[in-house]
Length: 114
Image 1: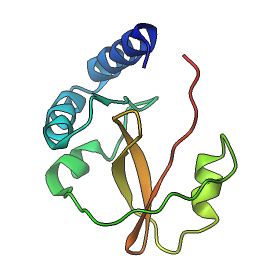
Image 2 (image 1 turned 180 degrees about the vertical axis):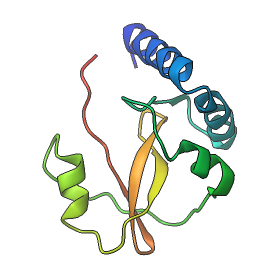
Image 3 (image 1 turned 30 degrees about the vertical axis):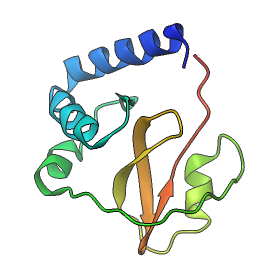
Image 4 (image 1 turned 90 degrees about the horizontal axis):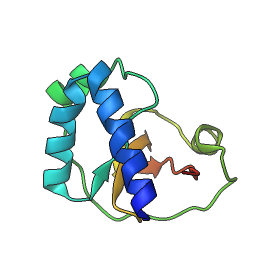
């Protein structure tokens, strides 16, 4: 990750946490588990208070399935049976939203230009 990308993500997180302070608590919790940065959601997440109250960590084997670029939700929708929300870690060590399919976690990983 370039210094410019780090600056962009840090600024995005600060802006988002200014609108939704609970993100700071989530960031602390997630980074204790690993990773380098938390990618802020593009808008306040109405489920964040529930996630902080009732969320839990799961682990297990993962499988990469490369699908259509920049079609995160459509890709997940094409294979899901039962949806729930969660977080994942990208290869760059950043946490972002995921969708679960039964016992499988489907990571939504969209390319972002900085």
